[in-house]
Image (tube, rainbow, N blue to C red; front, top):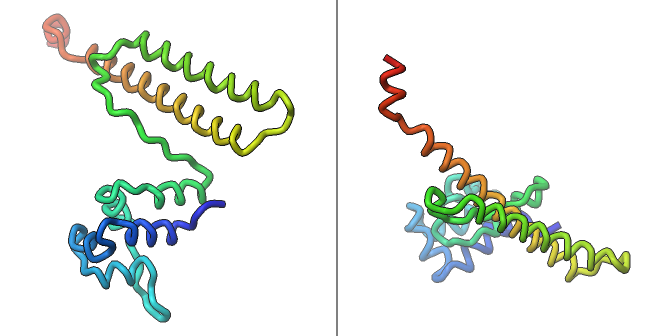
Length: 162
């Protein structure tokens, strides 16, 4: 198992440029308070809240805490692509999904050929799987945008509704 959620949050705070003293004011806290929340001293009731953890991730762009939460719960976080999906080509997205799926198949075929999966092969599969999921999400976003475009009120629909 990977890093614990509490260790991930502690490391995120202390690895931030300037550490807790620089990060704390950006979430409305004092540096010492934030330090105590991410690593409470013996006998302390201090604890970091979920909203603060979210703010810390947003400000730092460090997602170790998110990944630790997902790992503990058996999930995977995937950064979604930022696209202007309404103006993208749906068939282009579909082709990209097919290409990424082909890459997954290739990694699995090569890795399974000798019936021994190396750490590198497993890492390659994780990376390729993530790329497939991102391509699939882009296709879904594009399709949803096209669906929303089709639901705009047209003059003919207004007359029929009256």
